[in-house]
Image 1 (cartoon, rainbow, N blue to C red):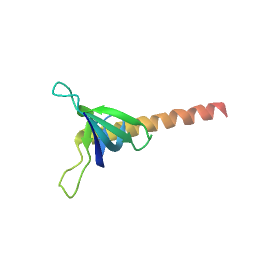
Image 2: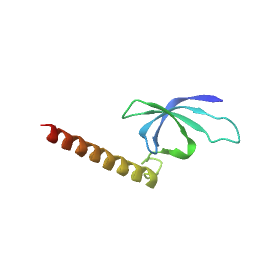
Image 3: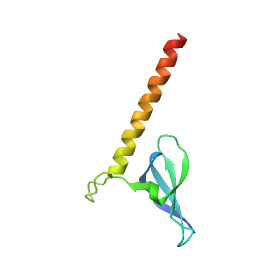
Image 4: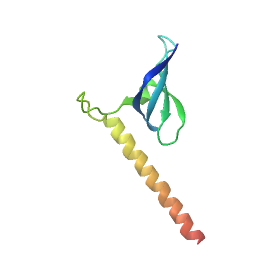
Length: 95
């Protein structure tokens, strides 16, 4: 069963980043829920299994940032910095 979410739900997909869940697919009792999610940074649409999706922090609800989300964001930042550094090194060599 496919359920369109209205309103969308802000989530973090581990390994992909922040985005909005726009729908949910439920294949039944023997399967994880699948979250159809638009990723903010890339605009990609991913069907993420339930185990990879986390809600963000919510001050009003008293929910702090999930430690897995914080670790994933830190890892993604390090990866981005390493990519940027590699690109900069390649430009220096070519110049």
